[in-house]
Length: 334
Ligand code: UT7
Image 1 (cartoon, rainbow, N blue to C red):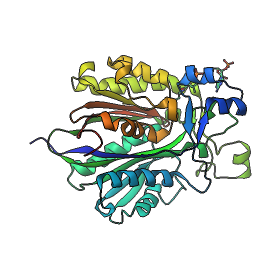
Image 2: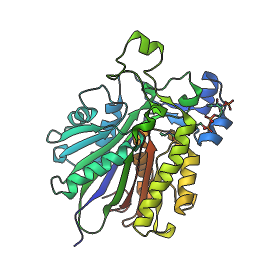
Image 3: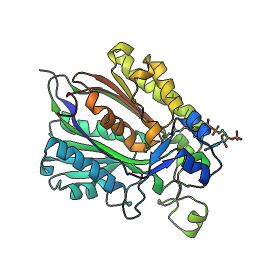
Image 4: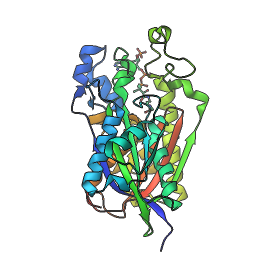
C-alpha cells in the first residue's frame, strides 16, 4: 500500500452561454482579431451577462454537475474551497454561498485569493485535509467572473479575460494515484503590476476610486509577461526534474491559460510538444482561477488512470506554482 494521497475523482464545470468574440472587440476598442490572436491566442471568451448572477452562481453550477455525474449526496462533502478574485462580495466567503446552494450542509467552506494560481493553491490546501486523514471528500473550485472587474474601454486588458468555473472532488487514495508533488510560491514586491487598487481597506470605494477606475483590474502586461514566462517554466521544470520525469512520462501539461506564448515557453522548457498541452485559451480566454480545472473538464473524457499531468500557473501577487498529478480514473466515470 502506498502513502495516503489526495486523488481527483471527479470534475465539473460551468461556462456562461454568451460569447464575446474578437470581432465584437473590434467594435468596442481600437484592436483587431490579428493582434489578439497572435499576441494572446484568444478568439472568444464566455461572459456571464445576467447582472443578478455572480461567481457563486457559476461555481455552484460546476459543483452541481460534478455531484450529478457521481450521483453524490451533497451532505457527504466535508469541505468546500473556492479560489477566486471576484467573490460575490467581500464577505461572506463565496464558498459559503456555494455550499448552501448545493446543499453541502455538513461542509465548512472558505475562499482562497491567489489570482491565477488560485486553483493550484486551493488544490494543495484541500489535499492536506485528505492526506492528514481529516476529510474524505473535499470540493475544490476555481471560479471567476472577470467581466465584473474588467474595463471594457481599456484595450490592453479587456480582450484577455473571460468568465467561468470548474471544480474537482478530492478523495483519499492509497494505490499510487493523486497529487504526487507540488510547489507553491509568492512574491508581493511587484504587487502593483497586476492588481485592483480600489474597494479594499487601502482605498475604500468612493467617488474618487470610481473616477480613477480603481474598481477595475490593472495590469502592466510586459513585466507580468516576463515574470510569468520565467516563473511558470521554472516551477514546472522544478517539479519534473525533482521527480525524475521526462517529457515522455508526461501525458499532459495543464497550464494556466493567460497567453499562448507563455504556455509555449513552459512546454519547451519541459521538453513536451504542444500536442501534449491542454489548450482552450482560444475559446475561453483567461478565466483566472478557473483555467486549469476547465482544462481538466474539457479533457476528462480522454484521460486514463495513471496519466501523469503537470499543472502550472502564474498570476497576480505575484503567485505561481506547479503540481504533479497521477490521474486516478478512466474517462468520465470515477
Ligand atoms: O493571468 C495572470 C497573468 N497575466 C499574464 O500572464 C499576462 C501577461 N502579459 C501578456 O500576456 C502580454 O503582455 C499582453 C497580451 C497583455 C500584451 O502583449 P505584449 O506583446 O506584451 O504587448 P505590449 O503590452 O508590449 O503592447 C504592444 C503594443 C502597444 O502599442 P505600442 O506602444 O507599441 O504602439 C500596445 O498599446 O500593442 C498595443 N496593444 C494593442 N493593440 C491592439 C495593447 N493591447 C492591444 C490590443 N489591440 N488589444
